[in-house]
Length: 500
Image (cartoon, rainbow, N blue to C red; front, side, top):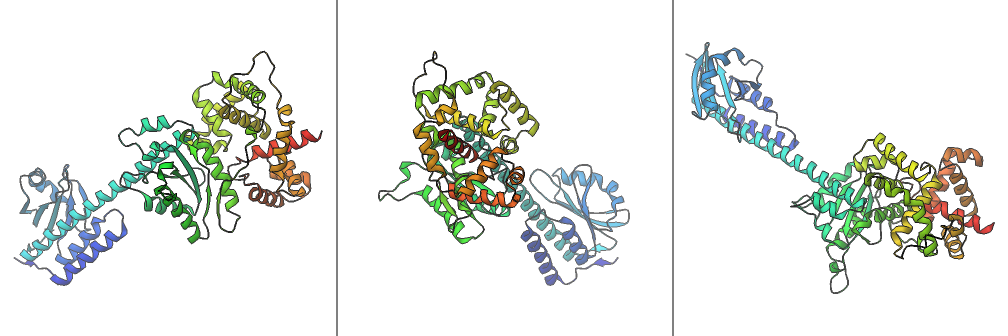
């Protein structure tokens, strides 16, 4: 009887190693069929990988005689069951060699079939190839496990960000019980908002990631709304400072992000001031404003240097009475509705939906409920600006309840005060008269650049160019998240009210 000989032993094994290296370098699922085809070319035998469940063929060479599976069924069962490690037999005129591949709990069988008797050299190559397939499959399992870990770690980081954005660090701790991010032990944090190509975000996140899936005491989170943004929550505790006053690990992370911007012309970075964990949303807003300015500056890195906010210059008791009167209807609404209303003040509703992993219809339903309670149209920029200011006043004021017998002061009266007028004058000072005129037309058009352009008799692109220039000069984000529009509304209103 003829014997199947191995062709070119040393060269052939080198070819198998090249195939392994090629597949390993791809970082994708192993292609067992390519290895089986190599084995067929090298030995002349037809080969299949048979799963333990009822002899299902996972992969095979084109000429493998599948009809022999029925005859081999008892032998395959013994092999898969662990009673045998290898066996040789004949089935339907084929000379068959079988070997078990042990891959964790599964025990697929490598089956080689030839019309001629398989030589000892051929059997040795089949055995070596089986070992290679085992290693490739284990590598594939490791790759899948690694990808699964990366996906879950990204989900956890995003969930922590969601909880912090709605002012719930305790909720973030409960969600991560057993693996609480060190960031949640910090007293304060800063938000570094990095603008970079979307394809670069994964590499940056992994460069800083530790085995726990976090980033030391920090968290780097893919922004689900703006694909070119990476939200970096950087711990900012006094304890992080060395004896010489220099920053410790947190400063190192921030410096690493600044270095990325210096080394990559397409990057930009906005940095917030320090915030407590439950005011992360405020830190994010500051970082967004700083990023808007950074994208047009030479260094492309800007730290938020905002002036005293409007809520800090209003007369405290009258302002608190007005704010509580505006927001009182929200007390009867579900927490999720209130949270969505808060978030709507600093980002579009589509962004709120993505951040909370809700449908846009669900978010719209909650907004309508809030609008009905407040008696306001939150699609109107002036209404949103009023609610935003009321929320800022109530979160900043710690004075006792105002006298409920006194009617609340109107917003116009609050903005007519000398300090509010001075705030508005300082805020608008960097702008030219033309830019202020464009901004007023834009506000009057409910932030519709096309409508403002028609009113002004200029192009939409010119309006947007004026708005981009105003972003840089005011340090406010107007066109990405739109979070800076509220200060524009109040500054223009205060200027107009004072001049009447």
